[in-house]
Image (cartoon, rainbow, N blue to C red; front, top):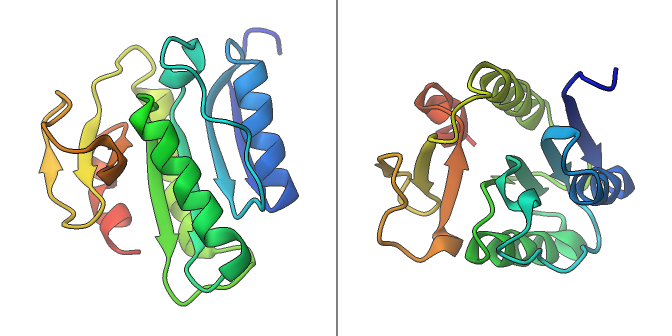
Length: 158
């Protein structure tokens, strides 16, 4: 197991755990996802190796006590250079999401398939416009990173 990649997916308190575990054991975790944590650690330093670990932050748009905190944490991480995707779930409160489950499963599979590449694609969270593998000249807090463009239909459908 020491040589196997770790993929983490957490909900609520488990989201906080997945995020914290990925941050503190950065050499073991290959990708992580966190749905609807109430609070977050501070965003990592831009020089941290953890910044290169792909992550998905998600929250239901109707989950009033967690949505803002989760989105703000996503923005702080992106400004610091993290390869994170933001996945707001429309008309969703605090609970599991089969829509997110499907996206994260594909995100993890794509991350495993492209383990030797950090290229990926950038997507504007507002317009859903895709950019090349180079970081576009856009505010980083407006962009999500995806390991490959085959995820775009699943990312856009939320």
